[in-house]
Structure formats: C-alpha cells, structure tokens
Image 1 (cartoon, rainbow, N blue to C red):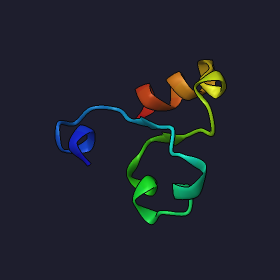
Image 2 (image 1 turned 45 degrees about the horizontal axis):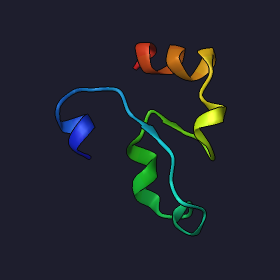
Image 3 (image 1 turned 90 degrees about the horizontal axis):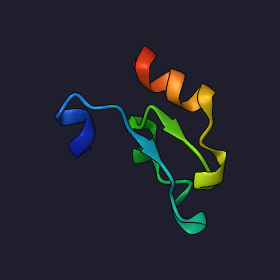
Image 4 (image 1 turned 45 degrees about the vertical axis):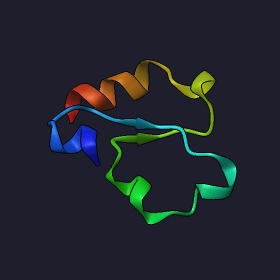
Length: 48
C-alpha cells in the first residue's frame, strides 16, 4: 500500500501462507520467489 501511495511500482513476494490475501492485488506483480523476477516483471512495473 505504501509503494502505491508513493506512486511507485511494487513487486510483492508474499510468504506461502499469505498468498491468498487479497491485498496483494494492489501490487503490480506478485511472484512466489525473488528468483521469479525477470525482465517481464520489470516491464510490467514500467508499464504501471
């Protein structure tokens, strides 16, 4: 929420037990692991 309020892009990496939390929908990209962050994720941030 803070990143979006600051008009920043946001990649969320929630813990497995918290993945179903609807607040993650605020993130531009949600991944299961930092290893999943790739060029497509970064492109989604810039498309914003």
